[in-house]
Every structure is written in C-alpha cells, then in structure tokens.
Amino acid sequence: MGEIDITQGRLEEKADIFADICNVLMFNGEQIVLPEQLLETGRTSQYKADDGSIHQEDRDVAKYWQKGRVRISLIGLENQIKSISYMPHRVIGYDGASYRSQILGDSPYELYPVITLVLYFGMKHWNNPLSLSEEMIISDKLKPYFNDYKINLFEIAFLKPEQVALFKSDFREVADYFVQKRTNGNYTPSKRTLKYVDEVLKFLAAISGDDRFISLKIPREKGVVTMCDIVNGFVEQGISQGISQGISQGEARTLIKCVENLMKNKNLTASEACEILGYELSDYEAAKDVMLTKV
Image (cartoon, rainbow, N blue to C red; front, top):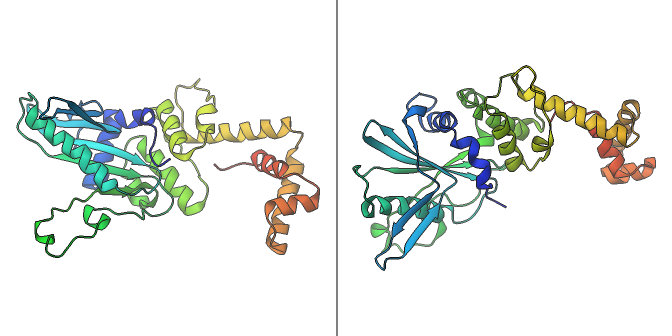
C-alpha cells in the first residue's frame, strides 16, 4: 500500500505540526506560517459540474493559510510510503478541484494559490515521475502548447541532520526516526518531550508498519513522555516475550553470537545457522527481542 491511512493524518492536522512542516520544507525553518493563521478546510474539495452533479477530491490533510481577511493559500499534505506512478496526475486532480471550487463557490475571498506537498517516507529514493511531462511522450509539435505540472516531493528519510534539527514540533521525532533507520538501520531516541504522544505513535505505526508503536502502554506518571520512554517500552516488551518463551538473557546473547558467526563465516542464512545449532528461527528472533536495546 503506497498511501497512509488518512486516519493517521491526525498528527499533521495539529496546527503547530502543520505549520512546522511547511516552515521547514518550504522556507528552510523560517517562521513564515504561524499556527494561529491556519484554518480547517476538511479533506474534501467539492465543486458542482455544469450538469449539476457534485464532484470531490479527498486529500490527506489540508488547511487554509490566512492573515486577517486575506486568504494567502490553501496548502495540502499528501503522505506516501511507496513511490507510485501517476502522482503528478493525482496532485493536479487535487489542486484542480480546489481551484474550481474557488470560482464556483460562494467564497468572499479573492482567488488564491493552491499548494500540495508530497511527504515521502520510503527508504529508497523516489523512482517515479515528478512531472506530467515525465509520464508521457509529447510530440515536439505539441510541446510549445503543453503546460507541465510538477509535484513538490520531499523525501523525509533523506533529510540532512541539520534539516531535521529545524523542526520545532513533534514532527522532528518522526523525521529523525526515518533518517536514522535509513542511514544506520536502527534508531537511537532523543529525550525531547512529546506533545502529542498518541498521535505520534499512531503515525509512526501507520508509516513504519511496526504495531509496537500502538500496542505499548506508556506510563505517564510524570506527565511527560519521550521517545526514550517508548524505546524502553520496546525493550521491556521484548524481554517479557523472550522470558515467556523460556529464553534467558544469557542464552539469548550466546544464541545471537553463534548465529551471527555462522552467517558471517559460513555465508549462511539465519534460518540455516539456527538449524545447525538445533534452534528454530523463531528462537533467534525471540533472542533478538530479549537483547533489544535499539528500535
């Protein structure tokens, strides 16, 4: 599935999160968009066609950016976990529906620009077209009359550390998680306090496919939760599962070392190494959970 369940977009619906994403990705961290300037739009752009029928396009998240009575823009966010074909066609559909609603609706505002940001969370670079012209073959005779349409794509896992540091909201932890997982294969959490704990966990679960983010019960006696608390929860959960399967920490450490030595020295798979040692692959996986110190 290339798209993220829109119910998980609730993190981005928070005005401070939405503004933070816009300011970092569009304005290099400069505080141009303020949370109090953002107004709800709903996810659906509707317009009435000439035959009277109602048409609509559903976005992941969208907000009006407005100063006083001046509507500056409509900004939409589209989340992707896989690189997909025809994304420019989809985005032009979203934007076109928004523009059409401006001229057919009863809005008191002057016409305003519509901007869509595509947030891509994949661990490999986007490998599909970024513009209409890349999706099709255009005759040289038609090119002078063809209006190209490009998408604004941001590869979150490929952001530089200094870009991640520009985020001021909980989205920094989201971006940092994917950058670390791509570059290091694991994740060392920060001790920054999360403002939207449930929303961050649900968002990470939806994007990463790791259900531990939503199965954990995080103690909140102190009133604050950090990503360190969440990772510690993973460790405790792994130890509990390992013990329940009869695997001690000492046995887990030995099993992991033996399996990895066989894999390295004999060029075996984990399953083949486990078979030689008289273990099941599930024992090796449980051992890794027991010894887990990093997500």
